[in-house]
Amino acid sequence: MGTPRWSRGASLAWVAGCYTLALAVAAITLRFVPPELNTFWKAAIADIAATFVVFAFSRGLKCSSMYDAYWSVAPIVIVFYWLFHAEEGVHPIRAGAVLFLVTWWGIRLTYNWARSWPGLHHTDWRYEIMKERAPKVWFFSDLFGIHLFPTVEVLAALSGAWVAVSQGTNALSWIDALALVVTAGAIVIETVADQQLVAFAKVKKPGEIIKNGLWAYSRHPNYFGELSFWWGLYLFGLAANPGYLWTIVGPIAMSAMFLGVSIPWMDQRSCERRPEYADHMRRVSGLVPWFPKKA
Image (cartoon, rainbow, N blue to C red; front, side):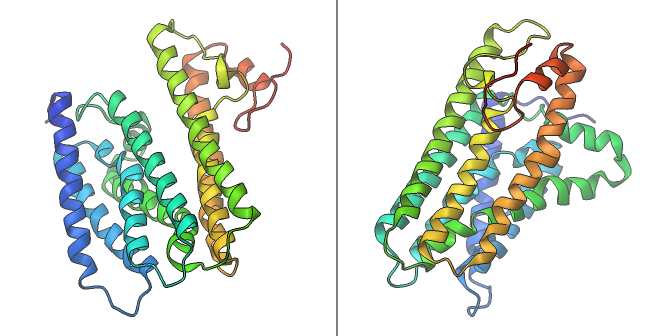
């Protein structure tokens, strides 16, 4: 049997119900984690438990894209939890700024996903490729590659926020100002890029490439904004307490995923579907916005 063709409204209701249950399971899990663990690891265990709930829904409804919005929803809840259990002396302005920025980022990204997701009958094309290439191990690819790995990666990338909102007690400094500019600027860049892409999708012709706005200077300006956001959170953590050197692993891992997987996959797909894209790749920067080369 194929995936049922749920209406878009019903599909979104399923996602909302799934995430609500996942949140409840996470809350219950927190009651049983060892009390000697710090709040980062407590949240990590609860987040992984919630991810298994989402995975169960994905399998039951035959749609791995059930997980997609979890990427942007879970961090809001996690940062609220960390702030609620913050150590004494955490700077309130820094913590408030991080909470606001993560909430802004999460709501915006979730909205951007919701307005374009057709419903449960639709699964991300990358997941379909993974399934076609190795159908015998699809269960494990789905569990570890699509669900658990992103959860762990986002947790690692959020570690800077954990330091900023719950651990670090340093006074505000120029690093905080830099972190604010980078993180807020990243959200603005991602917002503008996504809006330009939505507008282009409404009028594009078959095989046409978006070349206006931010997309004239980067093939993936939305990815540039996303990566900058995670590096901005790391800077907040660095400002709060530079002793947590391990937190740099998060944004590095995120950068490796986008540079090593997401961008190459998108470029390959565009080359297959758009005859002019190979030349476009030669002229336009892959990630960091820069002036395009002359034709």
